[in-house]
Image 1 (cartoon, one colour):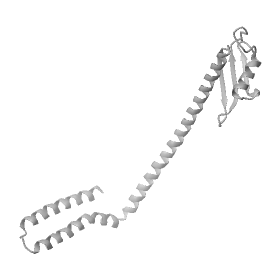
Image 2 (cartoon, rainbow, N blue to C red):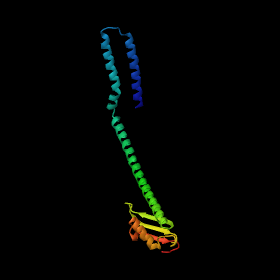
Image 3 (cartoon, one colour):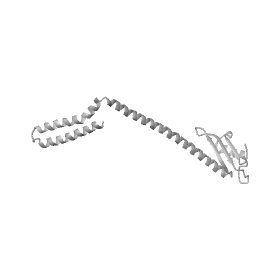
Image 4 (cartoon, rainbow, N blue to C red):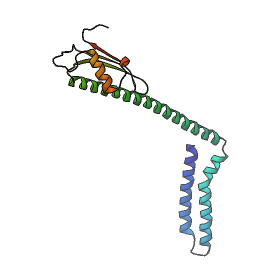
Length: 176
């Protein structure tokens, strides 16, 4: 392919030199326009010749097939990259959602005088709460508006509309 291109460039350079030489030596007569027409036809043929040779060559189909295969392979790689990106994006959204949910619960419980040690949230594919486990410090009834674990569970149920069966609150030191 490179040889064909080199030959074509050399032919064009030779043609350019030939046309320049012809322009210098032809007389200013009526034949001048016919000579320029002939030079134009030769130039067009020289421009089209490599394309005609490529089309005559049987390797064109193979070359086109290789290009199409490369394009298909690149598209498949892009689809795989998009799927991986989509999965990572979904994981990041899920993680961010869970972290923000934990922060919100912690903040609201601290407003009620409850100190949260840990929160574990288990989510479904649709971001619904499957289970929530909250480990809190021993409730100090003097500081907290919620007097016991049952009131904490009830508060979370009312605040976030999560079923009682999905909420598990454990005081520090308490064993299930």
